[in-house]
Every structure is written in structure tokens, then in C-alpha cells.
Image 1 (spheres, rainbow, N blue to C red):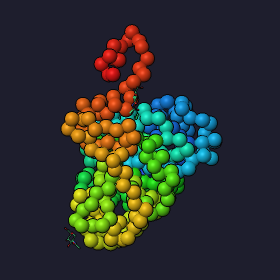
Image 2 (cartoon, protein in one colour):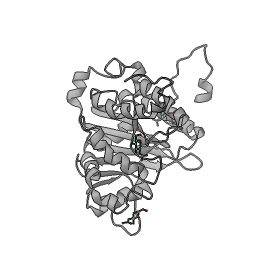
Image 3 (tube, rainbow, N blue to C red):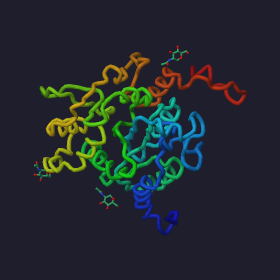
Image 4 (cartoon, protein in one colour):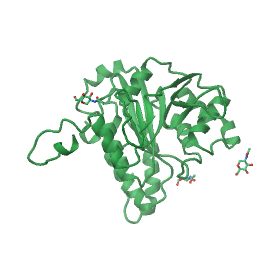
Length: 310
Ligand SMILES: *[C@@H]1O[C@H](CO)[C@@H](O)[C@H](O)[C@H]1NC(C)=O
Ligand SMILES: *[C@@H]1O[C@H](CO)[C@@H](O)[C@H](O)[C@H]1NC(C)=O
Ligand SMILES: *[C@@H]1O[C@H](CO)[C@@H](O)[C@H](O)[C@H]1NC(C)=O
């Protein structure tokens, strides 16, 4: 594919779409990556593997016990947040014996500036997925995501598919450890809440995991579209589809290890799987401090940060 020239500028959105749909199929599987796929591709070898923190790839490949796709649903123009979230994933300790890939998920990119800048992110990070939908939160984006994943990643399926947001700090290793001993089929896991007298818990939109078979079922379930059940609060709707179909029998509530950060930011817990409502940089900074992500900066006369960050 040609890089976009000024005359083909209008084609940039299409190019982005093509790159996104074609690349995942071509990309070699990254079993045994640092757990975060190509997020660290600036420091990776030609095959997209992180060069630090990993044992020889072959050894890990044999050991990978499970695979997880993490889709962070966000918007093209939220670049500063995406930068923070990307760092948040990249700087985590790797999840051992697991293949975990993190992707930022958008609907159609319609703005030319967004498309151009997103093209750079694709070239640099290779962690973007653009779906065939109009950008929205509660009008079917989650449906577009879950129903597209089985096709987009058919060449290298995952055991589990996660949907999360760009105001959630997910601790991947902690989640993977939770999943390790769980079934690989018919799973629906997250922060459970009861709704409208339903006996079965719904999983909160801060982040939930379904097994690959559940995502594959969503892709084929005509009743979801026929009932307009793609529309509405996305987390409740996902729970509704799954409950109506009698799916997700292996259902796990990770409360209190998944939670909303409160106003005073004083309810962090060391065993956190996910903390949510990180709506501004102050809250991200507090989160990074709490989880020691800011610690261990090498002393240097080039900066004076440490006393401020710690
Ligand atoms: C998204 O973009 C593609 C390619 O330009 C187009 O075919 C499709 O109709 C668009 N979908 C929506 C929902 O806007
Ligand atoms: C679904 O929504 C469309 C458009 O709003 C409407 O025409 C149709 O009657 C709805 N179908 C059902 C089953 O509610
Ligand atoms: C952060 O580091 C401190 C000092 O080593 C330690 O006591 C604390 O448990 C760490 N916090 C977390 C969340 O791991």
C-alpha cells in the first residue's frame, strides 16, 4: 500500500481501515510477548517481540497457558489519554505464560486530521483497530467490537476477549492470574452488579471478559440485532444478550478487586485488578504513584523529578 500523498488525502480513512483489517491477519502471532503485544514496538525486534523482560520466545510459546485480547474502546481524538493508557500498559510487569494483546478500538474515522494522526500511531504502535460503525458509546460500538473480533482475529484466536475503557487502569498480570484457573468456555467475568431483579449479575462497563465462544456467538446471534439490543447502555445490553441466551454460565464477579476510584482517591488496594473513573491526569498520576509505576527513576543531573513524583 502506498503512503498517502496529498492527492490521496481523502483516502486516508480508507487506508487506515485497510491497514487495520489486513494487518492483524498478516502479523505473526506474538505468543510469549511481553504480555502487551506491540505496545512496546519501539523497543522490539523485527518480529514485534519486546527485547527486555522475556525469556527466549520459544520457551514462552510452549508455556503460554492462555491468551487474552484487551480492547480499549476510545475515540480517535483522545490522543493524550491514549498516550497515558498506552504507557500504563507498557510499563506493567509482564503477565507470565500468557499471550496478551492490547488494542485501541474505534469506529469509522471520519475526520481527516484524526485519520492522519492515527496513521502515525498505526505505524509506530500497530495497536489500532477501526471497526465498521459510526462513533458512539451506547449505540452499538460494543456490539461492533465483540461481533467483529472473531472475524478480525480468526487467524490467531484468543481464549478471552475483554472490553474496557480509557478511564480504567487494568493490571494485566492480576487479571491473567484470575483467568488462569478458570474455564476457557462460556465465561463472563468482571465487576458484577444486579439489575432489575435479574438473578444473574451484569458486568460493569469498566471492564469485562468473555470467552472466545461467547464472542463468536455474539457475531452470529441474529436476535441481538433483530431486537435492537445493540442500542442502550452497553454493559447492560451485553448482560441482557448473554442472559437471554442462557450463556455465560461461568460467571465471575471480581469485586472488590475491580472498583471505582472514589472522590478522595483513598480506596486503592494492592490486589487491584482494575480501577475505574480515571477521568483526568490527576487521577492517573495518583494511580501510577500508588502502584509504584513512578518509582525507581535513575538519578540523573538531567532532571529533578524524583522528589515530586514520589
Ligand atoms: C465505515 O466506513 C466504511 C469504509 O469507508 C464504509 O463502507 C461504511 O459504510 C462505514 N460505516 C458506517 C457505519 O459509517
Ligand atoms: C428497531 O429500531 C428501528 C429504528 O429505530 C425501528 O424501526 C424498529 O421497529 C425497531 N425494532 C424493534 C423490534 O423494536
Ligand atoms: C510500593 O512500594 C512500596 C515500597 O517498596 C511497598 O511498600 C508497596 O507495597 C508497593 N505498593 C504496591 C501497590 O505494590
